[in-house]
Image (cartoon, rainbow, N blue to C red; front, side):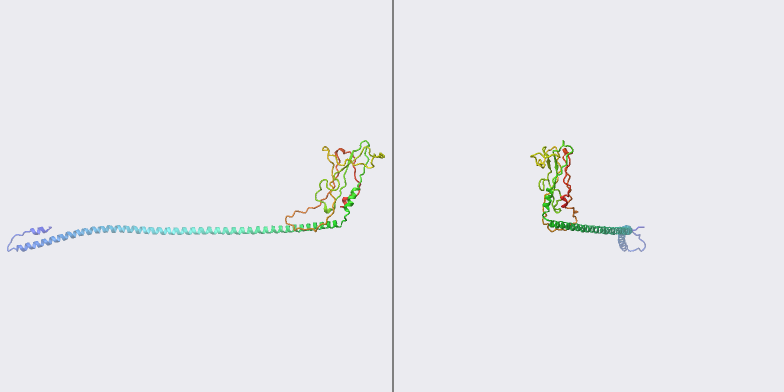
Length: 338
């Protein structure tokens, strides 16, 4: 039975023999009701506090559970992250080691290839240089031989020139006059024609040529007209009234045939007879001392300064091919004295 403070105040008692003091009982009941009310209020307050505390505890438990879960999750996450980081670190370290080993191997291979290539190039360069040195030595020997040969040729040529100059100095000055006098004494031998009825009107006799010493012979033939006298062939004409073979000359006619014409005919339709280029006689000057220049590697071969000059044979006129040939006396030529 639940007793409240109001029940205690309203409680009434029956009267009996020799009962109790009413005021004392009422006072006690009032005090008891007050105490009961106070205890009820305290109990209510305590209950409220208990409920609040229980709510707080429940909330704290929920928070604790959440924190525990969060902590557990964080711990698990951290553990997994640590494990994953360790795995990734190990993987990175392994990959770095493999890449470093690969790079080191490639670097070693490249260095070995570069060193081998450098050795090969050095060997090739040394072989090329040795071959070049050998070829240069051979070329040097060849050039030395060529130089020595050119020096010998120049010395021989200088000696020959000096000998010719000495001979020219020792030759008497009257040699040219003797040659000219001998050239002037050349005679013409006339042969009798095959038939008296056909006599050539003229025939060409080449004039003798005079030459100077071998030291003054030019390398090329002189131009036409150079030399003493007229270098062109002379035409000897026979007059109708001239002396005939086996007959006496007519009175008033010259004893020797006249040379006619003085100059050759200029006929464009008739080819000119062959001509002999006659060099002008000259005296041998005082030859200076021979100067031997220092030969260079590109010196051209020495050619003779005085080529052999063969006197050309006279060419007869085309219109007089059947005419008998007129030759000079078969005697020693003055070219042999040159």
